[in-house]
Image 1 (cartoon, rainbow over the protein chains, first blue to last red):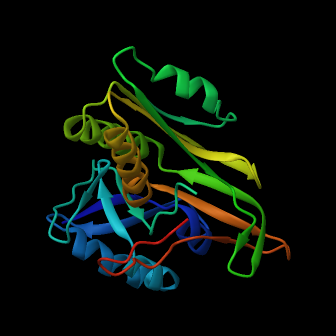
Image 2 (image 1 turned 45 degrees about the horizontal axis):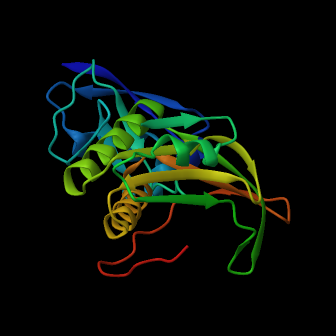
Length: 84
Length: 146
């Protein structure tokens, strides 16, 4: 069974993908690692920057094994450059 | 206090805001838009954020600083949007009874902000090109200077 997940994009990722949001179908019981694979397959252009990015689920950085569900707020966080 | 704002940062007010009668030291750090990066000339920066998470991380940094140093008060403010060279992009103001703690706490706060908070800058170069800055991580032990 599949679930629809929405992933927020920022900065250069948003620029490359041409959108601030991607929607993907993932099997239920997927984890962050599965999401990365699916993103690489669906949007190959973001692969390099994606590899250098962290994933945030519900405003918290998570590891590769973290589970995902359809109600989660998921964002790809490319290397940050706040401050000056 | 933490804030994301699109308005110019009033650093004088922030400095006054954190003052306390039991705090003999106030340290205010200002990050400003710099005109030179290596040999490239910046004319402006655009800052974007993931707002909910950025505020959450700023609040965590405030809590972390308060737990590690005797802080009278602390203010962390980051500006978003379009900033010209010389404008203040970020301000951290900390008060503490003594200056060693005030300096250390302020330093820690801005270092953590630059490491953790989902905010990104887009360079507007003098040649007309623009690029988002996504730095490669410095290897352990290397400290980048401003």
